[in-house]
Amino acid sequence: MFQGSFVALVTPMQPDGNIDKKSLHDLVEWHINSGTDGLVIGGTTGEGSTLTDEEQYEIVADVVAQVKKRIPVIAGTGSNSTHHTIELTRNAKKAGADAALIVTPYYNKPPQQGLYEHYKMVAEKVALPILLYNVPGRTACDLLPETVERLAKISNIVGIKEATGKIERATEILKRCGKNFKIYSGDDATAMDLMLEGAVGVISVTANVAPSKMHLLCKATLNGDQATAKTVNDELMPLHQNLFLEANPIPTKWVLHQMGLIPAGIRLPLSPLNPKFHADLKNAMEKAGIT
Image 1 (tube, rainbow, N blue to C red):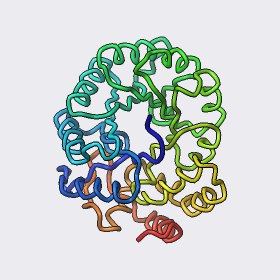
Image 2: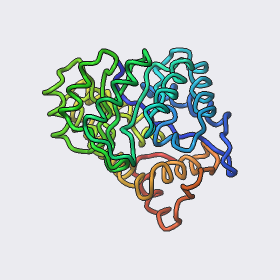
Image 3: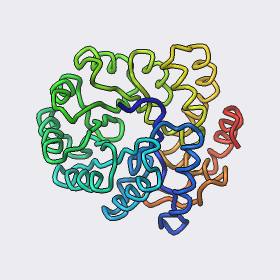
Image 4: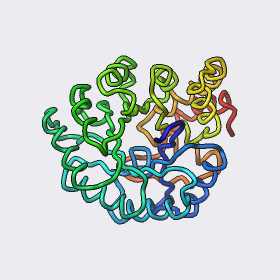
């Protein structure tokens, strides 16, 4: 099963908002060469909520064709409509994705039974491995451990990206669901601690700008080399924190543009990074040893 450092990849865009396919191609190769263990395409960091269905399908298909099974490719396919989520997940399967990452339905505020029925229906309609994605800070919807336990009994629901930042949440899920159900951190700042408690990797924002160090952090942690893991994590902590000075992926795209890896484009309603945060991010880049 998937493990290690999975980058929640940005979608490079020109200043007019059009997708920059050459930059995307170059980013993918850079990640593979840097040791990134897997790619997540069209998720939160990839601005999946403002991609059209056609764009989502096209970039997943293009990345799958480019990667050629060198590392896994996971497609973000969640929405706040069950019908639309099914369609997006079908598109991901057709495009050749290895799995789908499906965020809880945002804005609707469904009850736990609604969440269960939502994921159950998607899993029944599309024969593709599914990772649940719980990020209540964005969705106003919290997928509780008891509901995760019910969903873990469905054969193609294989894991969860837990982005609450609560270590005790992950340990409860592990206790309820067992080791065959995989947990991935969705919070870079607590990812090392979560892996020490039994998570098998991280779906990372920081990996966008420091892929080799995030790979090393995951490898060291999963191999029990806590000294190396702590050293690397301390170097990356300013990035873990400052990449969220404004809504993700605004700071991440700014850093990647500073590194000369992508153009400056981002889609409304997101806007370019406020200049008051530039110095903080430059300082974080220096501490992490990236330029």
